[in-house]
Each structure stands twice: as structure tokens, then as C-alpha cells.
Image 1 (cartoon, one colour):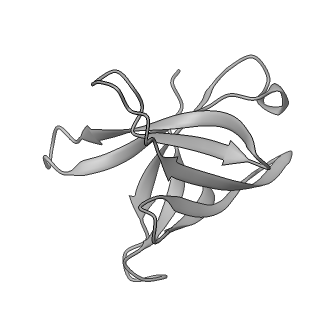
Image 2 (tube, one colour):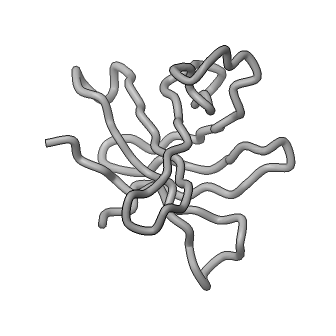
Image 3 (cartoon, one colour):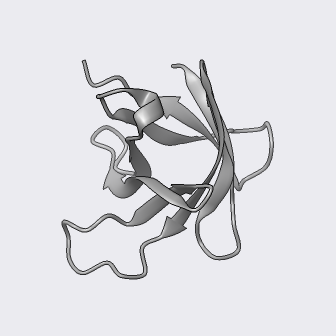
Length: 107
């Protein structure tokens, strides 16, 4: 597992933190999608400096049956491919509302 960032839960139900990997270091906001209009709409929208760069979906894990957030980011600085990550709890490190962004390579 490769951690490529760190976020904490916000009082608005989203997350705020940083995406950090070579050559990118960007502050990000993961905010609930208030305009969600069905099962195919994302649960979260991801922004950096006011620009939307991705989305997040709440999924249920197959092995444990617990919910997690799956993220998909796309921006010119990332090249032509999407960056996929999951939010993983930082058990015992920074408190209950803290999460690592765990890189989830699609290949």
C-alpha cells in the first residue's frame, strides 16, 4: 500500500488535506455532492484551488462488508490516465477522523 496523501474529516461531511506524490503536491477538498441525482452520480466531488479534479464514490468492501470511499482524479498534471485511490483509516495515528489516500493502481 502506498499512501499518496492525507485528509481529515470536515464538519460539513467531507474531507480536507493534501495529495502528495512526485511531482504533485496539492491541497484538496473532498466535498459531499449535494446535487447527487441517482446511484450513478458520485457521492463526493474533489477540488483543488477551486477546480474540480475528480470524484468519490462510497462502496462496500467484499471481504468485510464495510463502507469505504473510492476516489478517481484526473487533471493535466497527472497525464492522460486517471489516478485511483481509496480513503484508508489511520488507525491509532491521527484520530478517528483522519485518513490516508491509498494509491489503487488500475493496472
